[in-house]
Structures are given as structure tokens and as C-alpha cells.
Picture 1 (cartoon, rainbow, N blue to C red):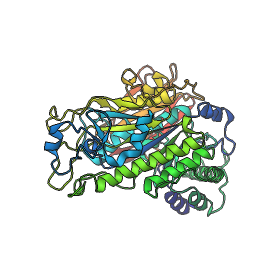
Picture 2: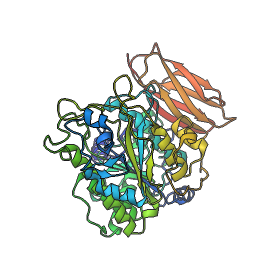
Picture 3: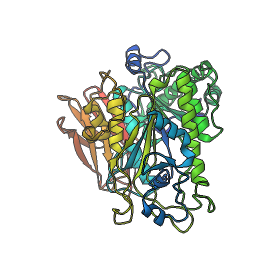
Picture 4: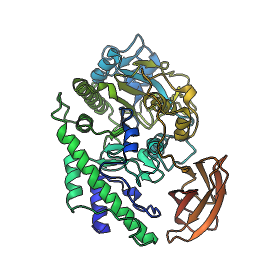
Length: 526
């Protein structure tokens, strides 16, 4: 398979195209079909799955969980406010949007949590920047190049993709790979729309033979070619395993809604039921559907319209999925979480809609979730200087709950993944905590963050390296010429590289610590 054909096939399947430029010294895939048994044992030691549902565009939290006893809500939303008589009661002061009947039922069963007022300090109201912040788990002034999910998965399999588990670590049902799944060596999972289509596309060009160690040309171009061929072969392996899981699952036990999210959760259900051991599944709408600046509701009936349809799609798909998992005896292993880059303004605008805001509720669901309401009612009078809701819960506190309680990560590991310690503020969202597992084959060197990226005059490199390891960082151009070097103190793992005199372009950053080597890219832009 030539480079053009590989790129076309990878793009069609949503495969990890972002990893292609990475150059890995003497890259050889050491475990494909069958996997490394020690790594596979680690990944299967906790049979827990997290389903992430992204609601892109900025979901209107006030019309999702409605403060129906607050007159300010109705004064601020004379056209689009949901009437108290039409809301589904949550408690004496809050109600559900009537389109969320399925999720309300999960709440009443005790298997759904509503977390109020979720955002981050100094929230950014840009779709792109806001989404990046949520996906990378960074502060508003930090530009991350890896995702929180990718970093977590990298703690489990630090040598991925050189050493591959038998099953993919994460699966995104869609046409591209999310920033949230990126680790320092590229995507930590695979992406496709349909298991059968994925299998057909990957196998259209025939099999790809692994490049044995030492047979490829020891040049940047040779190592890149070897890397491409081995990634293509990993697609061969995973396409077969995904198809086998899908085929062996049998028929769903429920009728899924014929919607985008309904179809995607149906695929997740099939793969889980068919025995795929992936830790994390990610699904999302295909566009910024929740960006409801105009015609958010029907002008004649505020309980109908675009936003109601989106909430109904979410609720119907999630309730069908959880019922399917229950019927198949898999409910114990499933938890899910919704997220959106921001909420909407308190006041409606002049176009029967709402503009970009800040804090909003999110949902966590599953049989092992401590259902209930977390947080206070939104305060519609104590607002920020732009008239938006103040933060009550930092989104990384919820991530910490997932890592610590659902996946059993250690406090140190969770802190490494989230860059700061959020364990003290983690919400008790899960009934049973997983038992922490020991990392297998941990690397002596990991790049935690590189920023700013793009850079103008300097780059701060933050790493995690083993105590007593001899570590160094080099910056090279894509021809392999070393331009900058930096010695790292294993106690801090932080260093700064001056790039003021380097021209704009893409550069390769390499971290070496003893025998471990990690790569990432730095863009310089002026």
C-alpha cells in the first residue's frame, strides 16, 4: 500500500491519521493479534467502560434543568422559558425539560446524577477554544496538545502503539479522532462510523505485512514509512476484532431511536455485548447542533423546537442504551457522562434563542452511579461581569471522580492526567470504587505538556521522568537536524527552550530518559 492509498483509507475510516508524521526510532510493532498477555491482563483486570457523549455547540442548561420557581428565569426568558406546568418535576424548585422523560426515569431510579454549574475558572466563550479546554483538561490560559483521555490511557499502555493490546484502548464512533483521545505519540484509540464499513475499507487493499526490526532504512523517511506500514497493519487487526465483536453480539434487546446518537449508541452496545474490551467510547453529534442562537424553541410553544429535539434525541438514545445493557446483563460495567463546551446566557436574545454563556449542568449515568442532584440551584442574580452564571463545580473535579472512583486510578496518576490535584474536590458520583491496578511497563519518560504551542519565542516542556533517570530534550527540524538541546532535572521535569531565532514551521521534540524515547511536535508561528 502506498502512502496516498493509506492516507485515503485512513481518512475514510477516521483512523489515527494524526500519528503519521511521528518518527519513532527503530519502530516495530511487538504485539498485534493475541497481544502482549501482561498488558491484556492489566486492561481486563477491571471490566469497566465509560461512554462519553459530547453535546457540541454549548447546551442551554437553564432550559435543560429548569429553575421553575425563580421569577428571574421567566423575566429573562419571556419567549423561550419552559412553563412550570410543562416541566417534569425534579424537586420542589427544579424541573426537567419535558423532552427528557427517559433521563428523568433514570434519575428517579437512582442511576443518573445531575451536576450543577459546571465550567472552569475564567471560561472562554469560543466554541473551538472551549471545546479544546474540556478535551485537554487544561486551564483557560493553557494550550494543551494531548487529551485527558489519551493521557489516562497512556498511563495504562505507555508504549502504545509500539506495543498494542489485543483490543483498541478507546473507540470513537465518528469520522475523525477527537483531541480528547490524543496521547503524546498520537491517538490512543481508533475511529469509525460503522464496524462493517470499517472492516471493508481497511481490507480493500489487502493485508499489510509488519516491517521487521532492522529491515527499514534508518532515515527519517524510512522510519516514517515503517511507522505507516505498522499502523496500517494495526488497522487490519483491529478491523477484524471490531467486526467479530459486532457480529457476535446478536440483536439489540430494545428498539433504538433512528437518530444520529441513537445509531451511535447502538454500535457501542453491539461492541460491548460482543466482548470488545475497550475502556472508553466517545460519541458526538456531527456539528455544533447545540449552538442555538436563533429559533431555539418554537415561538408558539417553548417546549418544542430545535433544542427540544436535541434533548429528546439524547434522552431517548441513553435510556434505550441503558435498558439494552440491563437486559444483556452488562449494566454493572457501564457508566456514561455528557459534556458541552459551555452553557448559554441567562437572558434570551432577540432571535428566539440564547447566546454563548458559561456554567451548565451535565449528566453522569449508570447502575453504579450515585444518582441525585449535586450542587445548588443556579443563582440568576449573582452573575459575572458579562451577565453569565458563576462556576460551582470545576469540570476537572468530575473527571477526577471518573478516574479515581470508576477506573480506580491512584491520586498521583489522576494528578498527572489532569495536571493538578482535584482529588479533594472529586464528587462521590460512583457507588463502588474500582481497585487500583499497578501500571505495566511504565516508561521512564513522558511528555506531559508543551506550551505555548504554537510558540513564538519560547516553549516550556513539562515531563514526568523516573527519579535517577538521565533525561534530555532535543528540538530538531523534520530533516533530523538537532537545533536545540536541554538537560532536565528529574525532580522537576520542567525546562524552557528558546526558539526566538528559529523560522516558522513544524519541529520534532524528543524526550529521552535512559532507554525510553517519546516524541511530539512543536509549531512555531510568527
